[in-house]
Amino acid sequence: MSTATLEPLNQTISLPGCTLTPTSLELIGEPTDEDMAAIGLSLQRMEGCKAWWWGDFLIAQEKRRGEHYTRAYSELTGIDLQTLRRYKMVASFFKPLHRCNDLTWTHHLEAMLANTTSLDEGEKWLEKAREEKLPVPKLRAAIRWSKRNPALDDNSRPPEESYHEVLAFNRWSRKMLPKVGSFPKARARAILDDLKEADAFMEAVKQRAG
Image (tube, rainbow, N blue to C red):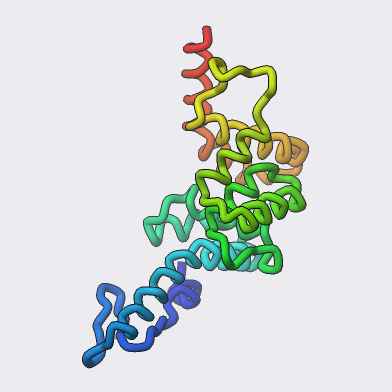
């Protein structure tokens, strides 16, 4: 990967009242309390925005250069590959016009996982979170409750730490299954490689279930 390819990630970011380097934030002069608060707010906003920035960047870069670039950036930056893929997935699902500035990226992730084929349902959950000022855990709980099988009583409900993720994976699998026949061999092999841990998990669960 050439340095020219990386140029969009290496542009200078500036904040008023300080100088940023790759390894430091250096204050300029004697900042006031208001200056420090403004810097802190800017850093907070950057942290909340980076998932969207990465997602939009990877979508654009892969349209230009191919799907392998997400893996390449994972190796370059040390950011987990699945994390980058989630950034890209959420950015692809919720285009800029459908994103809520007053909700976090994680709100959007949960709303997307409610139904990965329906933007309308995703927007419905975002609206609920915004109107009721739901933090992410409460939004996640509301989505889980709406999807719960009524036949399951409280003593037989699947564990919360896995139920949501299993539903999301099943929806993704149903969506992708009709497309498998059109996958290039390289993409099919990459997906198999990424699903090795999922395959091992399935085998372990089968053995446990008897």
